[in-house]
Length: 429
Ligand SMILES: *Cc1c(COP(=O)(O)O)cnc(C)c1O
Image (cartoon, rainbow, N blue to C red; front, side, top):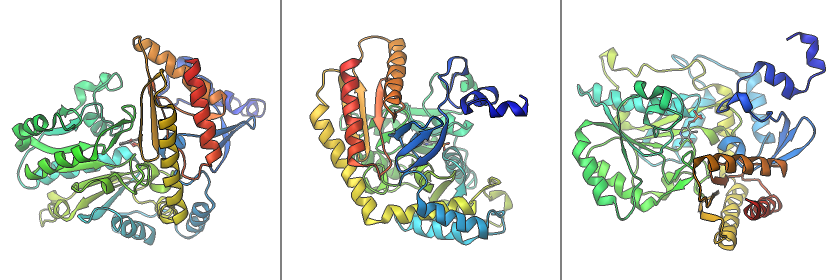
């Protein structure tokens, strides 16, 4: 494209010439909405239209967009130290964040390993487990995971996610996973039996605690998970708790771990980690995992790292976001959203078009009742997406499931507006 063309074209038109978007069939994609500014729970497009960000921009924003406290901290940091290699060097933002975060996690979490997104946080967790056994002279090839789980799009993370149309082109290249159902009071005994049969082949058990986000906000009981974790502990199976989505207040408590009594060996974080302002991932682990890599034998080192590992700006943003999370005002906002979701479910959950209305903390999901097959799901999904976008609400239904997980600063008025539009959609579709 010639450069002087840029002046006459909209951002959307310029985008179409040069950009390939994620999770998008570009052949018949709706024109992407060009956002030029964001503040609090609002996004503003190039025509000045305002959208309520009901899904926290793909589940990442915590305290609202362009929060001045995070912006000030990051801008001071970029003038001081922007980036430095993290092998052989360190810096205060990384240390401070690790200290703060470990203080909030289950007591057995002792060390922080930095990366730069959720998938890589999971990759590192997998490598920690596989090499934990390797360093002790054991080969353990099998991974235990839930059906329909989601842990990211890189190859290792994709391998341990549920197999689906999305992974189909790659299935021959993914490693071996044993899938089990989510635990319930009824199937627990059977699950334990299945696990015991393969426990000595398992490198680890990986799971999304309480809520399987990408599966359609599928929710399950903390008690049942606790019992399953207890069994894994008894069977000496390493546990990776993927809190990439559930971390930082989404479930109503700081972490899904705060709903559980058992503790995992390894935890993964990203998404809300920086308050949604910057890419950062991290993996925490117990002393036992860490110690399995300490050796005079260099081959027992964890050989993993990324160019932007522990980027000082991202660590500063995360540290600032944690400060905000711990503020009383934020905790009150989280409780307020939890209460309002519960009231909405009580009022509307019985609607004839609703198959299931469910909530975990600040996450509300409404599953549409559908009589027909999959193609209708696709249609419904697109109808609902367009319906809400046209009303100035950003939603991104997962099939026939719509969900909201707003930034914690969202006003009561905006929440009520979203609930009303959901009720409107229930009458139409
Ligand atoms: C989104 C997500 C990931 C992947 O994170 P990315 O930053 O998108 O790579 C991993 N696990 C869970 C539970 C997620 O929701």
